[in-house]
Image (tube, rainbow, N blue to C red; front, side, top):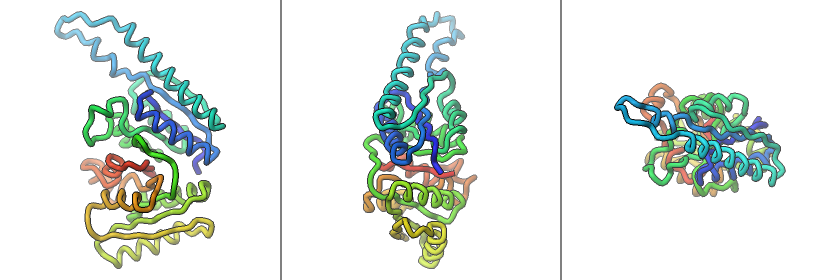
Length: 273
């Protein structure tokens, strides 16, 4: 059950989207929020290098700016949370952003982070480096929020029978019950018999008379694209899926359907662990 939510923010526009989504979710779940803004050590570390004998710039003004921006980001998040009646504590710390978020996330039930970060306009289809680091390292469920995402409509559960998707099913039931939403279950399989077996399995996992469930399946096309399309067709406000599929080692090194969905979806994606 999600009782404590960590919302990480760097003050950017993309982070603001995560702040709004995370606070809205916390308000509806009556969960507590821990806010975190990290003063990124890598932002100033390079300026200290003097291997070429070049005098580094004065770092005091830069460090003061980073401190002030982090504090302002926490104030913005705190004001937003209190405006929604959500209990919050917000901290500014120094360190490597993804490591700091992962470490602080151990105290939370869910980590919420903006997908694109402060360099969103300069990137291509790759997610931000901090987000990638968090998703690779954390052992907690993580909610990746793209700009423009809103918490409304049903949940889309992408189920492939993996251990991660079974955890996702349990999280989806808890969220749907507390949010009074419907769960749309999407199963991707090239074999109709296997699809039916997975639907039978997920029905047992979702057994709750108070949660309406809709089912859909597909046998053609890329799984990640079909998951996003199914979420769009359902009008979903959240995709819930396992962080790793049936071959975790393969996907860790080569990318996975979950990573592809998190990278491209216009809808927020909760990756369950």
